[in-house]
Image (cartoon, rainbow, N blue to C red; front, side, top):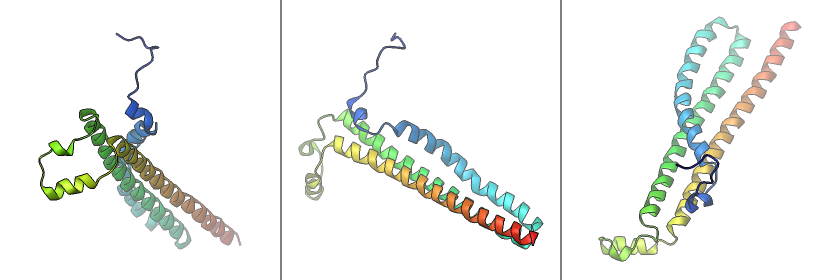
Length: 171
């Protein structure tokens, strides 16, 4: 049995990839569940609240609803795509663990057209693993950034309308 303070041997394939993959997978898994629940919850809240609001307040609520639902859908799509890209990355890691020196095309049973296509593919499995890791991280970052931009626009726009409505009602 290994002691808690003993160093672990890190797989060299994992040492080359971004250290964020574990956190990204955890966030994506939890967030997909949450983001798929959020649009329905927003619908219920909006449909219950909207009839009770005056025209000015209704406009602010509808805009906040629209932006919030848009951000939730963007995040749900992002996290689903991220999980699919991470699945591809995991598959490449599995291929590399089975074929550490690469797949020998000469030994594979395939037709001449497929053999020509495969021969035209350049790069090692390690490079494909790194590209897949980078692609998944970029999708994760872009999706979260877009959702944050939507949220910031929502907050700024709705706050501006809120202040304008309050000032108008004071006059």
